[in-house]
Length: 317
Image 1 (cartoon, rainbow, N blue to C red):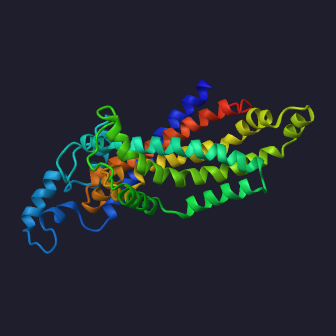
Image 2: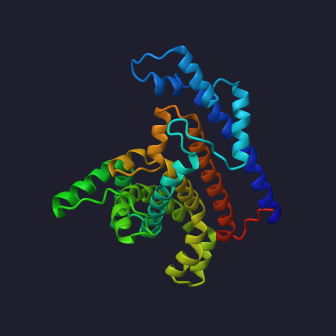
Image 3: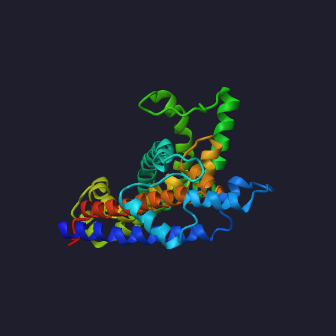
């Protein structure tokens, strides 16, 4: 087990290095730069000397390989640098929004898991009945309904039926739990519904596959109750693909809720991504990509470790 952990941790380094080099190159391929956007704007006229001076101040006049080496050196020291657009440390810009996006991702994951696993298992056990068709319809509707559109419907329902709108000003949960949850529970429901639909269909398919295995027939032949067979034998073995889907969706939620955040007026990492790309803020976008890539890698790592608990037959060494 220890050898596997060491190999996986060491394998993260070249993966993150490849992501860093790739995002650095791709950002420089985007037409235009932040200097022209800040000084010239739309149709403005700025002297070439002023543009050159600003590029020199930001370090954009140096060779790109040198910029890459300096940026990688900063990453090795956990120093993301300074935002080229705002002039503030990137760790500060991300820190303002990270806990908001993280809380939505956690709440959406909990909601999706509580819906997906029980309903998916029930649909598999009741295959071909009206319960199965109802759960499948519920899941298909979740896949077909965009999260931002469902968010708009939630806001309209609250406004029309109760004459109430979620709070606009974000307050951390440790400051005011009631106001925090009254604001974030609705985007968590909007994103968690689609999230649960994906995991629900995967749970149903996995449980159906496991229920056809020989050891399930053996358990039935031994006289075990159907509930015991489902909980102790089928469901745990069917969780491997479901855990993978839940983990990947959780990592996606940290930076992929751009439109949903805009609907609920939330200034999270998704909105920060968009603004960074619009402003050609190289250092900010690079730091955000590295953050999301790190979350994906760590999530996959913990999912692989969870496999051992779910299926003792797996020997990672």
